[in-house]
Length: 584
Image: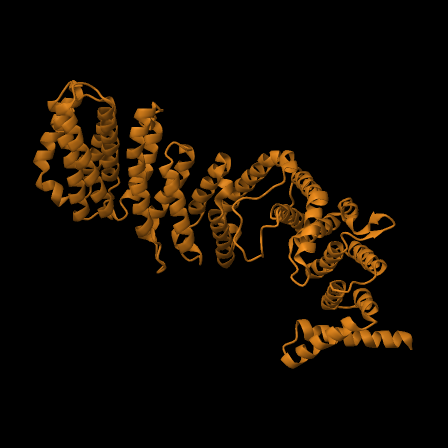
């Protein structure tokens, strides 16, 4: 009869669980919630919870038991200390014997342990703080299988989070006293344990097919984050308050944090792996699978760019730039624009690129990959059949403007601070200009207007200096450096002309820019040898080569009306330029 009664009770409880967690009938759910409250107040609560855990046939039955236990141990009038010890030990043994329970069940049961530990933090039995042995208990889990290690880490993570959580049903002073004691006695040990475990796990090859191994890494990272998010000085009023700008790490943690390079190294390795993931062969997936895979990559880019702290490390920054370039190498623009997050991500990438270009002295090898990305994106525009906006007409001109203005602004810093001049590294300059030439032709009117304005302004300043300066001055060196960059840039945009996309209007703009370079050549020719400057001369040679390939070469397929009109004048000027080059 007793067995029959227990089975009947179990069946009733499982029906209750179904109504409570997956039921669609609101009335049944409300009745199930009332029954849950009655169960918690019942003297048989603990025995019913044990019954659900040991004989329940669904994960929802186990979840109901965990929910009841959580509410039971959280009462303002606590259970006897012996009973709470028994509950804690029972749950520890239970999850240890069944490590493959549903994750939400393990989480709920571990939260019960965390609540018991927090509320009993200062309770003593036989001259011992009996609820502070949690780290010793967890170390037993860490000596077991990967599944047991995951459980042990979750215990520490939930405990750390629970200790940091303010319970407004209890005195805040008591919470602060418990949190402070936990911080001083256990938190550092937990962080050290987590870092050691992570190093141990990552020292071995990571099996991407092993779900538990992946889960272990994620849970350890979550544990470390919970430790660092701890309210060390009791300044956070509630969880909704803004993030603190400074983490008040205790002084005693200094030696622990000295190993921070480990995190950058791991982030670097993770980014290196992402570069390879972005390069995965297309044939590996069907079309729907490939779209989903690309969506995950784009979401990852968004997450990194929204929280770019790790990119302050040069190695991480370089790998991330490679990762962005690989995305366009392996995926077509038409596929990228179909991703839901594309508009926001392309905006973030544009801002990231502009910031990188403005720091012209930093990582030119990494900037190469960013320019490669934009070059390939813009080059793909004529072939996009999707109706979704690619937004490159918005951001490509901003990239071009950032490159132009940053290089001109760098000249004064280089001259006055006697730094290495980027113009001296002609291989890098030519490589970047060849990449920029495609980007610069997107919304060409904006680029041309900017270059005309800057060229006229700097040419006028240069001419004034020629008439007023008695010798080479700092101002003259700065002006010559800026003109050298402008000549390079004009040659670049002229050389970026494509027959199948260019219009007469664009050719007229090329003519406007080219005329200014020819006028500069005449100005320098009339002022020799005072006007001789090697950097400007090399830039002029670059321009002449680009002009020749675009408008004078034998392979020219389309005659420009605007340039034909002054073709004879251009030929004369070109001959004068050649003579000038030979003389110098």
